[in-house]
Image 1 (cartoon, one colour):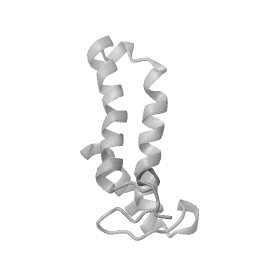
Image 2 (cartoon, rainbow, N blue to C red):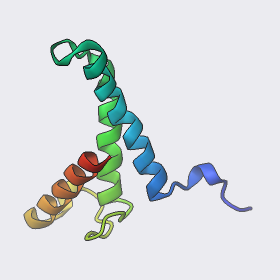
Image 3 (cartoon, rainbow, N blue to C red):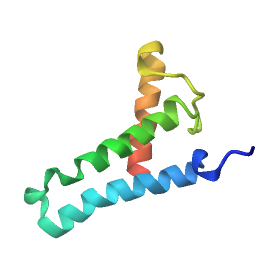
Image 4 (cartoon, one colour):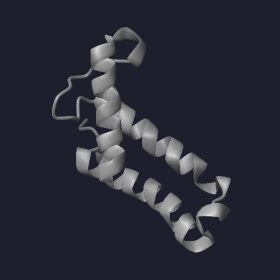
Length: 93
């Protein structure tokens, strides 16, 4: 039995999901103003950040990394590279 499409996600689909998560935060800033941002976008930001880490740590979806599992099992140099990739993913989306 072939895997259903919902079980597999492409890098583009994951990045689109991160765009939506970051968009919620931006929408609040535009609508409410920077000083009136609410906690409502918190779960969106957590989900977006989680996706970015999974892309780097588990899925090998970065230009310079392979799947490594978790941050605790890697060197400081590789950890920095993961952090840089996550920041870049969040900045690009």
